[in-house]
Image (cartoon, rainbow, N blue to C red; front, side, top):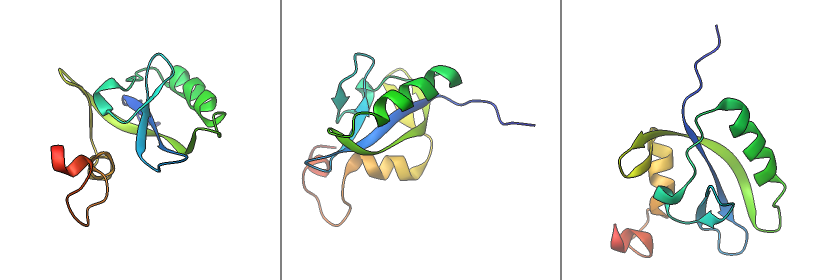
Length: 99
């Protein structure tokens, strides 16, 4: 039996900077996870993924990431996504300095 669809966001890395970005409902790439469009319908998520993959001049490594819906927007359900949104873990700089 197939697993039930869980909410997801579309994430990638910005082509020039390499920063982790998330696709918003208004088709922008944002470095801020709370601004990401939370996809709750599997068919809609697959369509948005195809559209995002076509934007190769902006991003690389586009994929769907599992999220949970919270009052503050999407939150990662897997530690990998939590690490990705905070940036490199070798020392505090950039995002880590403000989180």
